[in-house]
Length: 264
Image 1 (cartoon, rainbow, N blue to C red):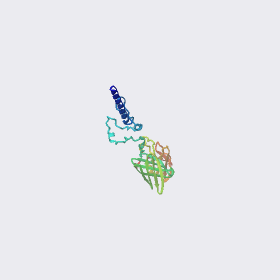
Image 2 (cartoon, rainbow, N blue to C red):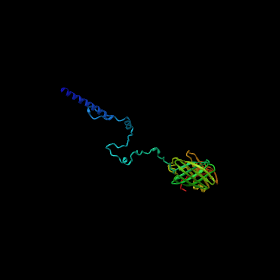
Image 3 (cartoon, rainbow, N blue to C red):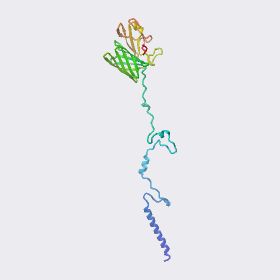
Image 4 (cartoon, one colour):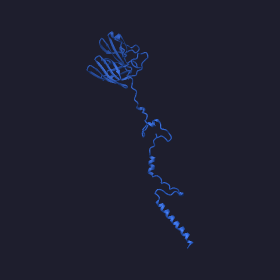
């Protein structure tokens, strides 16, 4: 009996150890399991939803990396805002055509109009090549046209490459539109505008004193239109000779000169 006592003691200890181990395993929190070698229990992997959320999180490209100092622009920009973008070059305004040149167009009644602008002053000539003609003068400031003539008034505006407005003669009104004439000026010709050839010609003052008057408009297509008044009667003007700026009417040579704003 004494020989069995140590054996019983060992069996009792083994049973006790087994019971304690089982109770310990049941008491451990879910999601952990004993580490191999008796170390600390390993943590359970993170839920899949949290991992996907972290992967979908947007990365801030302007975030300052660890160890780098923020720039002045980063320091001034409120958190959560993007840096300003450069303006789109295509949205820049287009350059407005200079008003200092010749503008040639038509009235509603078919008459031709030419306006010459220089240094804020303007001269205009209107004619239909048969019997109607008008001379006007005035100013063009900030794109606004204001001209007057004998019993006539012309007002309008210049926007970009288009001039438009209205001419009033007595109780009659006609709208007009005109475009810039980009005919280059010959160095030997007196310029009426900025870098353009003269568009309006009128007989010289000496010729007018002799009882003749006349005006011509040089169209962009190379043709001319004008009226000569002889003995108080208007007639279609013969074309000017470009070499001498002259023409012949009833055997009389008429000499013309470019109309320059502010010259008269």
